[in-house]
Length: 482
Length: 137
Image (cartoon, rainbow over all chains, first blue to last red; front, side, top):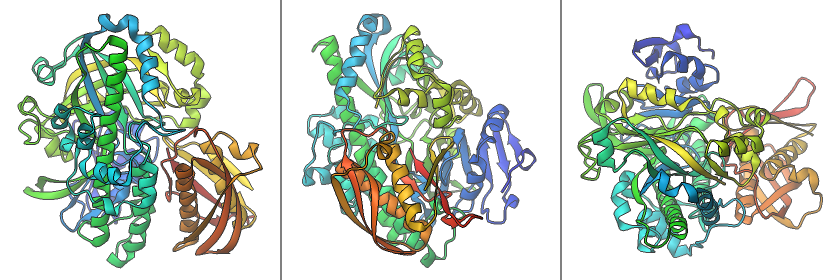
């Protein structure tokens, strides 16, 4: 399948469509949220072929969608949204991804950049010491079988109950850090074994913990509601459900692929394997995915505890504790109510490399956030900048309440390693005032800013299209990588 | 045995080849081991870890991907890298094998999954078995 620019029609500013007539297997159109230069960049890999394939999923409604940070994945594109009709539309583990509930959270301090500048090097080294990558030996916590059950059922609440988190944090997480449909008995022994010692670990790849400061505020009232102000030091955490989530996805893609023919489903790519949501296999996967999502929220809560420990070790026990601003998932499926063909209907929203971005009035939000909308956290590439946005009502109209999730890769890891001299990059970042602590130079090279699209362009696109508002820009000070 | 690493926007695309299916599957194991720990399987030929694997699948391509997935899970669970395979039984839909490797102190790369995307076990024009394997990183 080849997609040319002529196959793509502009339907409004920043919104492009490949019509349903493009391919006989498409059940809905495929839509791309992007500026024209970003669309041209997106066309350089196979993202749009993958987007067209997603439009063939049974029960898909509206359109298959990609955000401006999209890049080619291994089945579904990364940076995509697909909503299927509840209860018998498809659920596809590939539409969530192997890193179930990979996500980001932002912690805020009450310190300004000038107050911490002279301790930054010590802080980054202490954070590196406190936060294990989990790539060698495991983390500090070894879960018993009973504790594992509790983590999978309770999510972030487990960490709070065990003294690894703050009870105030729970209100400031998507779904309050726990999905109620979780069933630990549907998570395999192998998945549990892999998760036994990985709570509080970040992993490798694009996962990181970063100290930033607020460089710019765009919306005073919203920033105030979120507790953000210019010059403030904040901490960004990006990781997911680690080996446990990877194993759950692997186990169920295999099972669902085997079950698919009995539902008469054929897909153009095996990684799009799916079954009806209300089938036995669909429900088993959904409940296991919820359990893995809970593990991820617990993991990010434990990592926050490690960050808070490092903070106290450097700034003393009387330093005001870091507060959780918000925690969002960007690899997940949720049953939500959206407008479908002009009527409100329940749909299964698959977000793979996309962030929920609900507007003002959303019931689940903490009181302070309700009038301004849900925070959306967009990490940029290492050494550039990151953003805090606020969801809007328009995201519900255009993208099933979803927004982008990052800058989006543009170079392969091999190309990045060829083009980047990691020790030189580390030194250059240091000259710009950014400390990098990483397990390997290879990891630094693979995640170099040159490997990513310009996060400013991505964020300007989502903001100009109206699906989210720019609230604050964050500039990095220290990056901790696995 | 042929192992090549090709570009992919975010993940690792590996092309493997072999004169027979056993050699192709062995190439997959070695190629994956070399990612988990840089060039580990090129540097080691004595092993202290052993595990037995039995896998059944609906076709040859799934058999390879599921076989590599199983080895990946055991690698992380046992904190080991596996490099060598002895096949006890091998049919296009089922295999039994012993795998051999070594415990390691740390992984260089975290492979989230061995994916089915672009995988297609087939013979090339010269009769050599080959396939692409995409690892989610």
